[in-house]
Image (cartoon, rainbow, N blue to C red; front, side, top):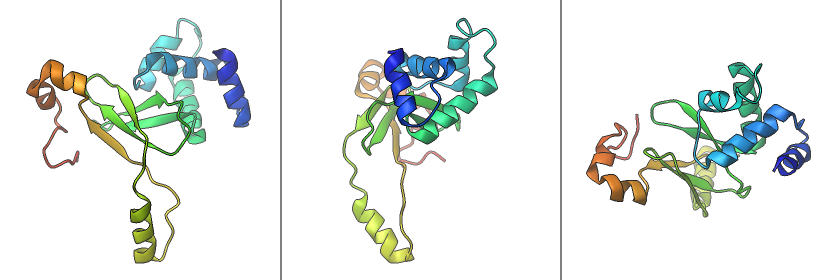
Length: 159
């Protein structure tokens, strides 16, 4: 696994430091989104002198290069997720179990054309994330899972 992550980093012209590779491994092993603090706790036994700012800095660098994805939680906490899918796509994020699922298609190109026509500008990118509760959490917890999350409103907005 180290070699795969190191090769990915080198292909992006990033240094494949042991800490960066370990962060990628931890996120890939997790298979759910994780906070910087959770990753820091997980890495501390392996890297005694790793600081939380180092974890934050590496996560931001990895996200900026597209190796990992940011998950913006309705609680305004920033989490990170290792997504091996390098094609343009969006995510469905379960707020209960933290599972992240790829949504394979993007149907926003017509909206981008409309925005371009309306503003006279050009859309360079977009980020879409759907927050909710996965089928497993809904079947296990029913309406209680929905009520656990203040962002679980019927209007679809998480202000």
